[in-house]
Length: 209
Image (cartoon, rainbow, N blue to C red; front, top):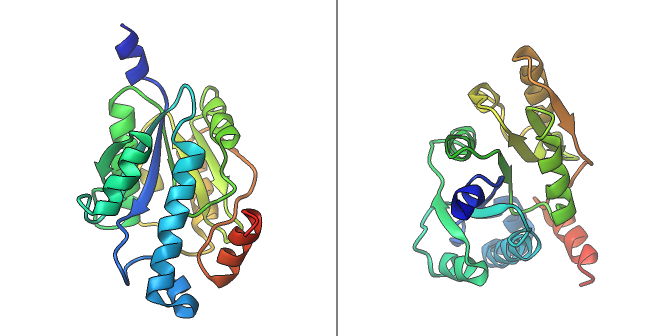
């Protein structure tokens, strides 16, 4: 019985890419080089896991795009005894829809965050989970017009198909679709992410480096 209850706890899916040189943080690589971007990516993922992997009452899973057998992935997984899952889909929308569906099919509400939003805290996640007690959808908007967190307690695949990802329209499009679907939704505090040199320096300042 205890195990069954634990399986139905809200699930937090942390999305990350396998740390492969030249395939991560490509905008950051324009100023830091591919090796610097790779090191930044690895640090951001580790930082995210340190903040979010052990929140009481929430199941945390690491969802990886790319090679799940990469040795660094193994280090991330064992660092926090995380459940490791492979992202499935041809684009970000399909991969997010698949992860959310997996959570909902298991009888849990599902939340997704990336690994490059350093202001997402355990308290922020708990607030998002609380919102899903009374709303269908919760969003953590980002300064660039996207979002750094999305959570659902009912299926809504329309939120993930045909979106203009990596544009300033993502958040607005998502809200507009939620309204068309008749979903109740709520928005949390605005986030920022690390995409370029400015974001990286902002991250270092936040961490006192």
